[in-house]
Amino acid sequence: MSFREGKKGELMKSKRFLLLTLVLALLLAACNNQTEPPPIITAGPGTTGAPTIEPSSLTPTAQPETFRHLTILYTNDEHGWMEATDDSGGAAGLMGLWRERWSYTEDSPFLILSGGDMWTGPAISTWFDGQSMAEVMDLMGYDAAALGNHEFDFGLDGLRERAARSEFPFLSANIRDKATGTVADVALPYVIREVNGIKVGLIGLTTTSTPRTTNPEHVAGFDFIPYQQALEEVVPQARADGAQLLVVVGHICAAEMRALAPAAAELGVAVLGGGHCHELVATTVGGIAIVEGGDNMRGYAKVDLTFDIASGAVVNVKPSTHLNTGGAPDPEVAALVAGWRARVDDELLQTIGYVSSEIAHRSDALFNMVTDAWLAAYPSADVAMTNRGGFRQAIPAGEITLATVVGVLPFDNVLIDVELTGAQLIENVECCAPVVGGMTTVGGYRLSDGTSVAPDGIYHVLVNDFMYVGGDNFRLQGYDPDAYNTAIDWRQPVIDWILSLNTSPEDPLDKYLDTAPR
Image (cartoon, rainbow, N blue to C red):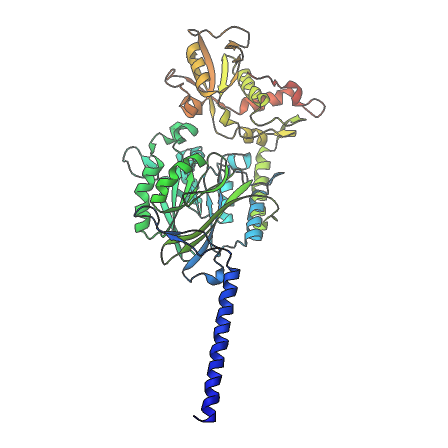
């Protein structure tokens, strides 16, 4: 062996030793730095569900190219509250918050979804049949919305107009046409949106309580089938159309979502979004994210999700909730809201009274004021009765305008004079806990003059037309199918009563209010 060959052999040994040392050092460093175990891949439940991967600490550099990220921003029960309040940034603040905190842009991997009940609320939305709120949500870039019960408040023509003019679809998979049994034409059962290379199937659900929680006449032609039945029918259709990831956009409560979660998991649903109960919810049940964003744009839910487009697996899902505070108002949204404020001010800014302290939402003072005003306007009635859900906000301290009253009573109802026996009157009070005027339920049923309600006596009772046709489970139309429609807008007596008092800071409305429970 030559001198050159001997040196070459020693050099090779030295290199192998150094390489071995480097490998051992790297392995030791990796062991010391590993804080969580690698992801555990498990088969998804059922034959139709996609496999899932348990949440892990995978860093972006460690993720395969087939892993794709998606963020869902979710609101529900917006109810027309586009303007900022003392505790909320409104629509403009929310848009600014999303841009600042989460780096939202129109072409980034986000979906903005609504769980429904978008329009009915303060005058800035209700007075225009929801057109203003629909335009605000268009500008904010909503991708889809569930059809809520209050989307029917302006009738089917009003709903269809909003659907035709909105830039995002309204969804519901569980509304059926009674005549044909097919999916009703007021909404789409699902749509597919491609985001960051993921084909996302968005499936809508509407609360089965809708016939009781909107004017029943507006939905008389529809059946609202169970949620699980609807998903079992529609999920295979969405899959056949190419959906890889399934998200339910529902106007259903958290308890209903939890009950639905096992069946949804069998079908491979990754996210259940809700509404209707005005809850702020972020949790997981059986690997499915369950979210609800509160109400009135005061908060929102967020779902961060990683999906493997190669295996169809949800790699990671993280739901959370947040308040709508601290965001710099988005200038475009703020300008649109200001334009609608100017319109409502032009039409409804007439001052009708003054109150020195807030009349709280759903307080005895507010209840009594409304029902007493009805009886003052229609004195031939013995009793006035209305559902508590019709009251939607407080009367703030200061000047009372027409817009204030529209915000308190936003629904387009009229008063009906129903003839009931005393027994029928008491039955409806006991079944549905209404607000009452002209009588008391404290310590027995007595009229305001002190006489007891006789079971076989005949009484004229003022109700709103929503209640008359069965809303909130009232049983009135069957007892008096020929009740008299007074054609009195239910807000007008309240406006007239406040005007008649000529209140001012020196003589505020407060002193005329009856705050006693009835």
